[in-house]
Amino acid sequence: MPSAIYHPSIRTLADTAAFHGRRQPEHTAIICEGHAVTYGQLHRESNRTAHALHAHARGNSHSHRHQPRVAHLGKDSEHFFDILFGCAKSGTTLVPLNWRLTAGEIAHILRDSGAEVLFVGAEFLGMAEKVGTELPEPPTLVLLDQPDAVGAGFLVWKAEHPDTDLDTNPAPEDPLVQVYTSGTTGRPKGVVLAHRSFFTIRDRLAEHNLDWVDWQLGDVNLISVPGFHVGGLWWAIQGFSAGITNVVTPMFVSRDAIDLIRKHGITTTCLVPAMLQMMLAEPGVSHADFTTLRKVAYGSSPITEKLLQQCLATIGCEFTQIYGLTECGMAAVFLSPDEHVVGGPRMKAAGRPCPGIDLKIVDDRRRPLSVHTVGEICIRTPARMLEYWGLPDATADTLVDGWIHTGDAGYLDEDGFLFICDRINDTIIVAGENIYPAEIENALAGHTGVFEAAVVGIPDDRWGEAVHAFVVPQPGQYVSPRELMLFLKGIIADFKIPTSYALIDQLPRNPSGKVLRRILRDQFWQHRERKIN
Image 1 (cartoon, one colour):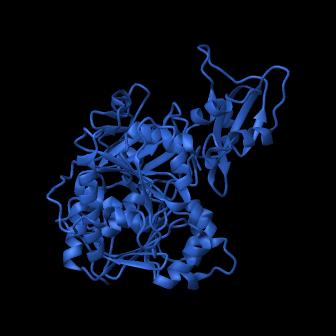
Image 2 (cartoon, helix red, strand yellow):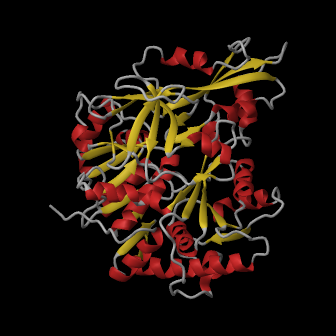
Image 3 (cartoon, helix red, strand yellow):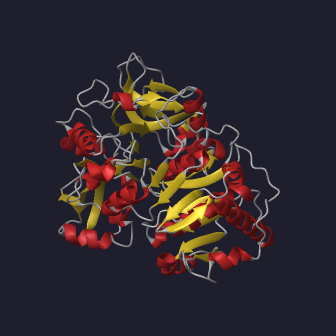
């Protein structure tokens, strides 16, 4: 059995690059679209990036912050991780942008974060320039080079700076990234995560000799969940911390992922169940495609027993479920490989908390509930967020006495296993993407033929959930679903646009006038044991 890898001296992402850059400079850190970067190169190049960021902050007359922000708009690449490490070394907070968002959505995040530099992939340059015209102080645009490009953009931007270590020593408590998640009011909130958010769970698992997520000598990691998601970011940082080779996909394509597993001998990866389902649906796929895989971690939604059965039969490796949320630093609860048994008693559980993490279930007055009683799931974790950027009231409402209030409903059994039953808030999760109804409802209200609308998540066998809109037309008017779909394009990201619509006379409301989304939603879930998919 290969030896487990754990480097306890690594406490921050800056430590990670320096440690492996010196210890194994010739070992391959990143492979992306055939382009390889060693740990030595990653350390030296991210040093240049750190110096460039530091110099830009000093020379920016608008920068008065101790912790400046920069943003990235592009698909994952070796440049993205160069920038991530450069931010870690220079005391800069990285704001990774979801490239599927619209110009208006990106403009809001840039305005809210105050990002001073925007690193942008070539295919999104037009979008970035358009966004810049909407901002009073547009960020400096730095074009990200293609792997074989010479003398353009990012490489020139940092070329004049030294590759020596910057004289900074970030602490585990210092901010590292600001990840935006949709808010209940429709405006995204910036979740500020410190370095510790990405290392404390690693420490707890290693200290208790748990193999729920582990790394071994010779591992090759496939990074398929994008870095603008906390899950993708967390998973990638675990691989870099272990010092293994990480194969980066700019965008998940199921056939390409299978080919990369075979070509590079992938041993570990993290996916969402929808990705697993797409891979298994590829024509001609067989166990021969996955013989090197030893472990798959998955999250964002439970895995169905039918899909697990297919995975065990065709992929044939260990599976670990991870439950958490951005505010928790991603990982908090794990369903271990031993519990992944088709028909097993724990397959409906999210799992057990990682050592050092506490769970409790509370009622609507935040009083603790006993086992097998459904209430709101609360998590106390050393990986928790620092804050919602610029939103002290929202921070105080979610983070109470060190406990993250998740908005998910569930219960604990007598053995400490967590079972998730429903959502207390109105979040919709489509293939791992968090969507809030208020944002879509606000967009629909802008159509002249819409009087009001309510949006809910409904079961979908492929994506977990789908977005469904109930629309009340203006008196005497008719609006078609196609008309509404076309109207929403460009206003909200495509993955947020409802895939089905129902025209109704009025929305159900309580006596105070609040729309009862739960009544609209429950009709789709009433025959299901669990009100999430």
